[in-house]
Amino acid sequence: MKKKLLVGLIVLAFLLQTGGPIMAEEESSKTVSEALTPTVSYQTHIENIGWEAEDAGQAWKLNGEMSGTSGKGLRLEGIKIKINNDINLSVQYQTHIQNVGWEEDSGRGWKKDGEMSGTKGMGYRLEAIQMKLIGVDANNYDLYYRVHAQNLGWLDWAKNGESAGTAGLGYRLEAIEIILRKKGGDAPGTTENPFIEPPPKSYDLGNTAGNLMNGGSCVYKDGNTYVNFLDGNNLYTSISKIDSSGNASIIYTPPKYYNPTDLNIKDDWLYYYLSPIKYSNTYALSGIYKIRVDGTQNTLINSDFSVRNMSLCGDQLFFSNGYRGVLSIGLNGENLTTLTDDSTLYTINDGLLFYQPADKSLQLLNLENNSRSTVQSKAVSKKSMIIENDYIFYLTFNGELYRVNVNGSNLIKLSNDKIGSFNIKDDYIYYGLDQTATIKRMNLDGSQKTVLINLTAYEIGSEYSQKNPFSIGSILLSDKSIYYFVSGGTGAPDGRAPVFRASLTGENNEKINDFK
Image: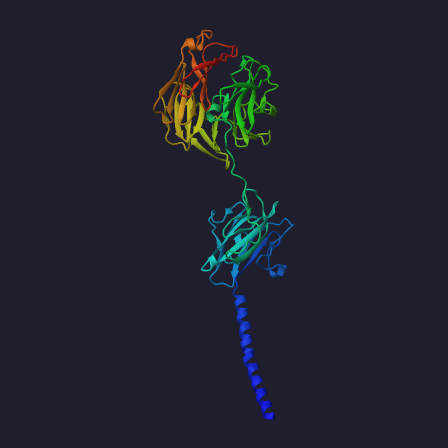
């Protein structure tokens, strides 16, 4: 009996000894498996705090924990990110830094595996971040991240190289969370808006540069044309609307002795300068106004300046002033700014403002970055100037029309005619001859010159004496018609002359107002 008991104890001891190592091996295997699951850890450099570290009571953060601060208004200035437990998986990242931009664009390059992205000791805020996985195992995981941005709070989740944060707003990042997940799993939250930037700045024009250089008496949009010469006399002119069927209606009649000029349009608002009529010596009501296209809500924007060649570009009005150069002002009268000190002639298109200062050179102001450069240093006295298709077209006081590239190269003379005025539409130059009532058209390179209109004295009207030769004054272009003024003869007391309209090919020419 004792012998059997002893054998049993020996067997039991053997089983316990062999079972123990098997269980330990299974536990060990489980621990190793968990240890090899990759994780992401990250650490930020915080304004007034420095790097998150053990001695600051914060340390590196892991898999979705918040790094940074919330509710303290402290900017993130730098960040380090690394992947743990996978020698075949790494992380690359770059930040958008105040005064620097994206690190790749600035030559600083992407950072990886615990390197610092951002700055230290410079006080620059981080504004956005991108990060992506690299390595053999990169296709097996998704890297999600979201940021807490100034004035916006937590934005949505970005992943795998997408931008998170803001750009162009000047907002600081204050905190960040990063999560590493198996490929194809659910996102930690919504992913719709991880990155916010303002829409591209608009430089849409309120009228064509050519129409504005010719006084802005005509502007068109959505099939409707607005003009200031259909109704009126030598004491005023009204703003009229011509619809797509040719029907005309008055939407605004100004006070006596004033004319609305420099017409521009944006959305359902017309912008104009209420100009005193020549010889009237009255200025009390003059100023920049806006009015809805239905004729309601006529509103004064600014009355401090005499205005010439007013152009709407984007969300600003630009105009020249006889003694203060070129200025800009917001569409509601805000942010009045002097752009040039001594220029009255300018043209604007696509955010580029070309102007002629007192030395008669040609200068460029880039409205996007406020940079300035000389396009043409030679002194040339210009009467009018239009920018179109990367070219600058300008007319001298001698009646010579030139074209030059916007960078100042390839100056060419376009015609040997003596020209009094010109306008541009659809790759054609329309120009009126000086001392003859003739309008021609040519291509932008000066080729294929064609006579469109050649008025006789009879067509102009016997009531206009020909003490001086007739010339084509302003040429205005709509989507369908040419409107033009005939000047040179003596007519109305204020010097106004008859207005004609024709098709863009010169047909159906007719007088539409005598201004007597």
